[in-house]
Length: 149
Length: 113
Image (tube, rainbow over all chains, first blue to last red; front, side, top):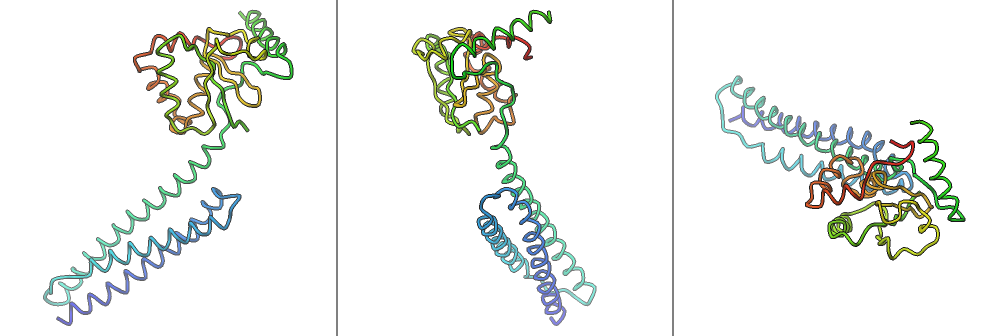
């Protein structure tokens, strides 16, 4: 029984430490992405970053707590095996969460970048102050194209 | 910075109208409006050589794209297709209106290719 208590204590300590470390990493590095996206509103970038980290804490702590329960095992070897299985499962879940978060940052940034892209092709003509200029432009393009042929 | 684009199209062709309705439903980065060639009276637009023959896009800052270029601008204006012009072309051209849509979008004129 005392083995199980030890497993629980070690598991809790490691999972809390891991979550805190990951959340802090996410917070500091995510800030760079979000500053790039919300260039005009740094306050909003900060707020989004904090809210994301709070969500990260809630999900991970909740998940780690749910994973805590283990069946009693015999001896130190059994205890280590149980601990390793639990930590392995937790680490993989945290990795999935982490990559999901990175993907989210990537998407937010790509969306913002996409909205600023210039038109993909140059205009065929321009309507300036008078209508003749557009027509002239097109005629000159046609002449140049004919000369190239 | 383009905020609005007007698309000049042939409202006499039912497939072009279907195209129009499809584009109007898609979320866009810029404000898109449609104008039939035969209703178009502005002197600046009347003088355009593609009048009634090709799809033409006119931006609020006076830039004009015709034919395939106008088609590319449609793709660029829509949120779901800005980075995926190929997907836009597939969806737009595989609609039942493929032939007519192509008729509205012949090869670009002049040196742009």
